[in-house]
Structures are given as C-alpha cells and as structure tokens.
Amino acid sequence: MSDIKEKVRELGKLSILSNRISDFHQKNMETYPFVVFNGIKEAEVDYGLERGGKNYVQYTLLLKNEAENPLLEKRLEMLDKSIKNLFWKEVSVIVILDGKKVFDSTPVETNNV
Image 1 (cartoon, rainbow, N blue to C red):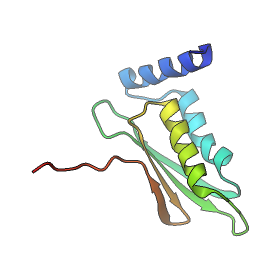
Image 2: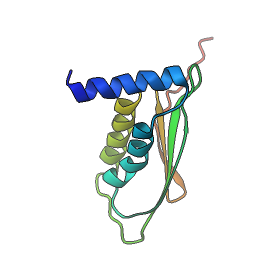
Image 3: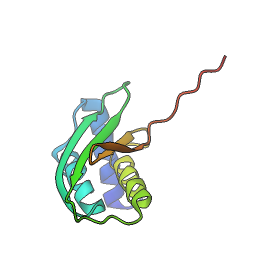
C-alpha cells in the first residue's frame, strides 16, 4: 500500500476513535462532488459518521440548467467509491440531485422469517 493510501486509512481510523472527522476529510468530502459533476450551482453535505451507528454521507446538489453530466451512473459510483476510500467501505452515500434522490448505496436489510 502506498504511503498516501496508508495515511488516509490511518486518518479514517482516527475518525472512528475520536468520533470526529479531520479537516482533511471535511475538505475532501466537500470537494468530491465538484470533481465528479459538471455545473454545480449549490452543494450541501450532511453526514453521520459515528462509532456503532449507521454511517452515511448525503449530498444535496443543485445543477445549473445547462449542465450536462453524461454517464451519470458512473459518476455516482465514482463518488461512492471515493467516499468509501476516504472513510471505510460501510459508509452509505446518498445523492439528491435537483430535488430527486438519484443514488443510495445503503444496504437493503432483509428480514429472515
């Protein structure tokens, strides 16, 4: 594993232990949608990253009218993968785009009867 990946993993572990994210995590989490999508007018990030809780990062994005984002599914998957690499693989990513939920990586719970 490269030094950078190892340092990111260590910061993720520290987040779990301290119950707070670092400035590094915050800045990356806020920047990712601007890297993944074209023409963002507004971006809001909400998250819950607590030890033992349901961990999620939710993006509420408003795009400019003329913004084009071909291959939207791949863009959403890239955002999901980026967040999971930044924190840990159990983090769910939710994306609300122009008022409509377009992505949710929260695992579906099944009830075994």
